[in-house]
Length: 473
Ligand code: SF4
Image 1: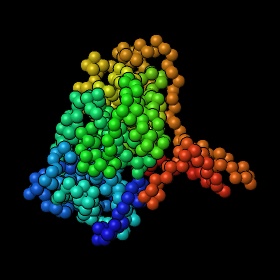
Image 2: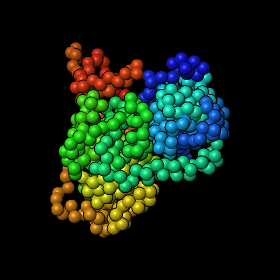
Image 3: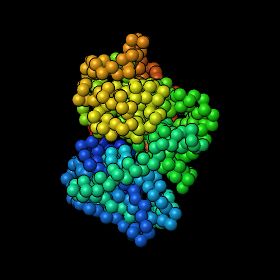
Image 4: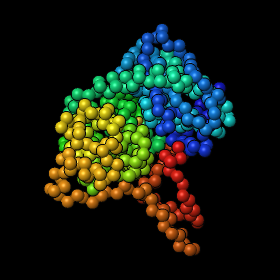
């Protein structure tokens, strides 16, 4: 784009979805090994914003040791005659997309969970400072959201300053989320959808209602409403819910139709309040995963920052891989922490009555929203680290799932769906299909191509063991 002539690397939608492996990274900011990190947008009075100004507090990229992980705070301050605080969430979520437009910059997740990598290749091309990165952000904000008249960006890498600012960021997220609490799905005549994560998960569509918060935990129903109003052609769009098909599971005709259209026919039916059957698709930047534990007929929840294995022996990364990529996987479900505060939190599955295990940190955060008589009946890593120990704990506490054990045989485990790709042995001298897939998403040249019911032929198949993305990070 001509507006980025002075930027040392290319900028464009073609780079969305790029992955940067650990070996190829110059440095990373945030991510699992860094405790405090954040990105925050603030709407300010016009005279408090200097348009285009980029500030770096702490060491710049070129001053940091190659291959290291560092704390980072990104503060975007915007002003405009018609801008107000209700748009802060909308502006903030755009940081994700805009940073991913920069060649050699990978941005994952949101808010206090950000994870940014800069490639060695782009560093060698001259991307050695936050200054050009800030310039790209400022220019994209103004060109894509004309409602913004002035914008300035601050990058904080000084660990002490990140810590100093961190509580303010957390407070801002909490006030934003609190605003949407109390409103019910039946009180509104519009739901919203978001496809921002399709660059990473091409068939993913988030459906955002007052009681079904976005997977990433960064877009409330109010944020989505504001976003679709100021940028109707953007990634967030209004959905007319249409006819209520199933009140218990949360199915509406208009939602099914919108998801079918936006997933290009890949997902035809969505139940908003369950992890089973036709759950909302999971992209990759969800804050937590709900997972079915067949031995106790209950659901566990593990969040991204939980270190170690969940009670079923699997770490977050493995559970996330079981459901990510825009798929609906029975019994495995990406979700946000804020959704756990909703009365519709997996309500079709029994809600909190069905939750048997979650990390202590998450339990503390959502404690006020768990029915009082259940709080002590839900185990954390301090009570159970194996399924056997969990079973004993639940029995001892008389958790509601115990009644299900006697009432019915525990259903068979819905195994995490393996990649829907089946590799077959090549028959000598014939062109056998070597891979088939229900849907195979490919990103190329800024286009998304989905091969439905594909059969792939090849002369040679090389199978190598590779670490998953999450392992390599
Ligand atoms: S998780 Fe959902 S709401 Fe959040 S950015 Fe991705 S698609 Fe949008």
